[in-house]
Image (cartoon, rainbow, N blue to C red; front, side):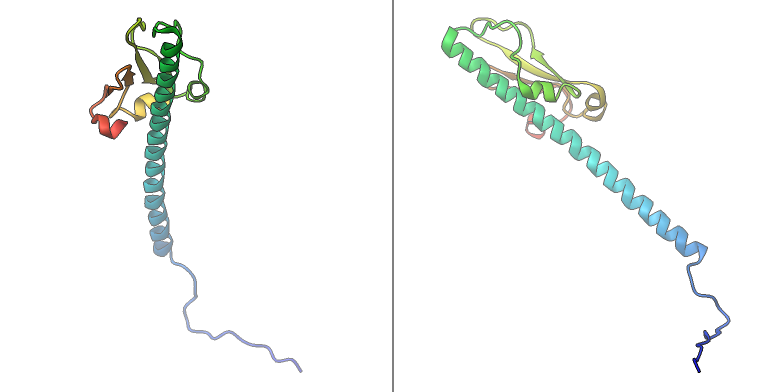
Length: 143
């Protein structure tokens, strides 16, 4: 004959109370808020780094062009793949028109990057390698 096991009756049911469940939910909400904020900050920094690298690539193009033509006056901003990849977050171009002896490249944040990256703002790079930013952060922080 099979023996059935009867649960012990302690007078109290096992499980989670509403308070315990609310504590777990509140903890998860706090951890999620911190993680999302950290992710957004990292994404902004990554896009800014990509824009700075694209400006460096454009500067290399300008120097190659100067070596061949003996002038920086090339007309339009070079059609670079990095500029196309970042087109949702930055507008790339010249600050003023390049002349025979100088140029200034700039990456202007747009859309989500504009509102998220107020500390650095527009990044610029000139023919002497001088890097600037239009925000409140230092050049070292932005570049």
